Image (cartoon, rainbow, N blue to C red; front, side):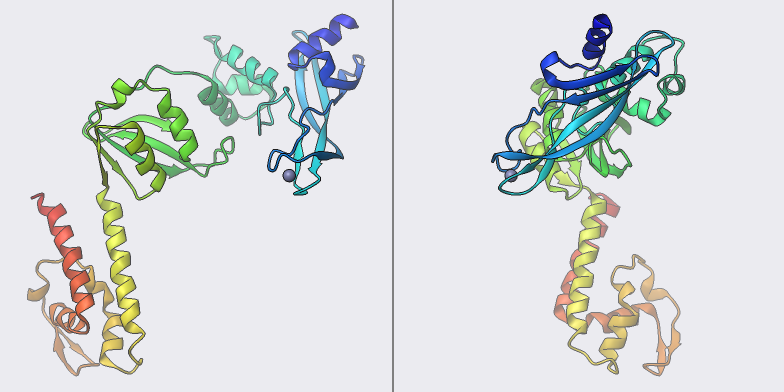
Length: 330
Ligand SMILES: [Zn+2]
């Protein structure tokens, strides 16, 4: 029995003083452990805490090749006496915000070393989905050092990865060779700083240009870690921003006109002409316009639209200057 208990505690990453009480039922492969309270102060305001009972978390421990023990852990729930926030007592059994114990994670990583095992087969052995095995592998397997080229892009994409509480994964991209450099599960500044601080600064110093969207942490980390690089906002986001500005100006001007006016009609019905890219606009044939009771082509309608306000003409000019600059690659 003592041997079993020692093995169990070792597997759970626990010391004897970490537990208050335990019940081990080997006939039913079941164990109930009550954990001692470890956190004594509030993690938010560092005030004292009081107990708010226990909650239960389960994990599986392989005792031998065929026996798996179901372990239920009773973990203290605490409440701050000052800010009244509740939180769980820290436990060495699980990594923070993880449902899988260190024991299970170690088992997964150990199994993945076997050449005949796949993500799916390990998932079957441990009893978890293949996607979770892949996430564990990505998180705990250290890969070869990353090499950064001279021009990189930093961007994000939506992901359902729950491990990092981030809706977006971050991608580093080699702009000239069109290759992915690395994909990170989190795009938050603290995570990116942690990641980049592990890379040799001599590698980061070789980067000359960085293209980002307008997400501020990308700018912050670029300035901090890529000391010799020039940072640029990518064209897609510049265009998006310019279009938003044009429509903002159009909406502001629209408020000054009543719905029965020509100006209101043009701003409401023909605003898409402001961002239309068509160098042959003026050569297009006209159509009879009921509002103006005459034949008008799109260029003539655009001219009427731009004559409404100088701000609109100014915004239109800036937008198309930028679009020309991109298109013709001066
Ligand atoms: Zn507190």
